[in-house]
Image 1 (tube, rainbow, N blue to C red):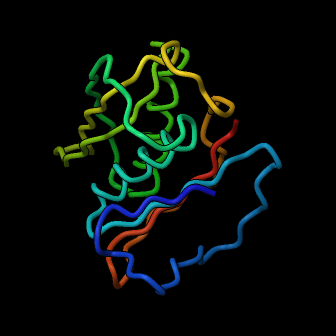
Image 2: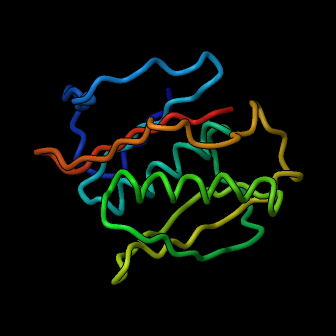
Length: 154
């Protein structure tokens, strides 16, 4: 499991909230990412960063491109699912991995700007994500900010 703390919403010693609904176990080849932050937008950025760190390992890489896209919706879990699906699609589409995300609200959903690294220019320590595991995405407001989690099919 990869987690990413993007702010003060997670305090040392505080337990990250668990899913309130029942969940099926992830497939053995799936990855689970989690993020928490003071705002929903920062939490989404943390989830993208956790996914990148899971694929690339820790450390900063040279940015090869920047992309911007919009997702539509009003449910935080659905929006996060759409963001992660789009980010994962950059691998086969551009041969690139999103390392950061800047997320902003629009009238119809979110606008996301990502920095990409060339997947061919780095040695990847693990498998490439194929998609978001169906029904695995959760995003919720907590008393300490926002928390989100997603299963990633690798």
